[in-house]
Image (cartoon, rainbow, N blue to C red; front, side, top):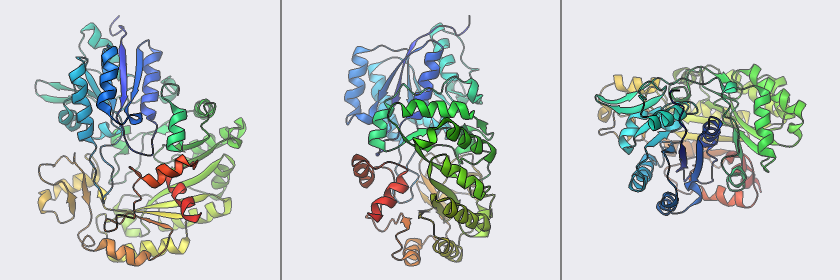
Length: 481
């Protein structure tokens, strides 16, 4: 039978971000590989200070048929630092290739945004764009049997004409049989990271001009059954994890599914045992839904609102209004849910007047916290990237910042910050915000104001002391104690 041979694979997490974030993709992938008969080891480099010693020790006593490496993020998506993670992945790939002849396969959400360029940069053997649960198993079996692999969905490989990339075949999530969480040390991740994680859906059908989620996960939303989601949460709760973050792009898209998830949490009794946080869209968000979320155990909501200016919301491709944002305040305050807004300032058409309107709105409606990001990371295959490409040479565009030379594919971090506000935006924002502690301001002119979650020692120490929850809420509680 074609592709039926089974083998052994090691899945590697190279992510060194602190506080630790559980590699949920590897947990799911390992389950899917085991379900069809492959042997799987997990090598989690986030737990070791010297990755070279770790891989040397592993391959010194283990022989595998393939190596899988997850690429969760290409960079920290943070204008102030612009830290590029792919060179670190390349170092891991090169070290592994010294120790084994087994093919190295890259995958993950970050990889799927620009797969050909990352594969070329890292000199890995293969990559899988999109979901790997089915494609990785097919690739492993066909390599073992010496069969053609060129038709595997999502496969990225080097052909005679350069790098080829197949269209992903996104899964029916409830039929995937991969959502089992016993392959990584979720309990340790909870102790050192402060929150568990779970997906209730994949994909996004929104049209935000900058977002890479539809590129990596598909433009169609695929839902998991509420029973499936709650069963996974219960399995993690049994391991001591009682605080979660839902990793969906927007929990309430569609709202009917979010309602069903909340109802299942309540009827199962799990809502009395766990707390959870989530991302959400300002619309639809009726008051009754806020009350249901609270009853289901929701401890906090992060609304990605981007702006408080109508023209900027339209320019960014958002499908809600300033009025919708205001309504979320009323719903959350009435239901008693802590919430924050994330702003994304500096997009096409931004002016000092639009920024001022946004900050004034935030102060007026008074969320618990406001996350404030300057500049928009440009990712390929987004509408913003298309817009930039049509405008000519990057080096001549006064609204672009970062690595511009020889980086037309946006592999290395490039940020859009409209030239109308770029010159003194940090000082302008500092003046508008003043001493208002509700604002998480990533001020590149003040290194003491660090709200980047990457290598945030304040958060690391707080988690060690027992703080649990979304990182924005931990920072909020720290500032109020």
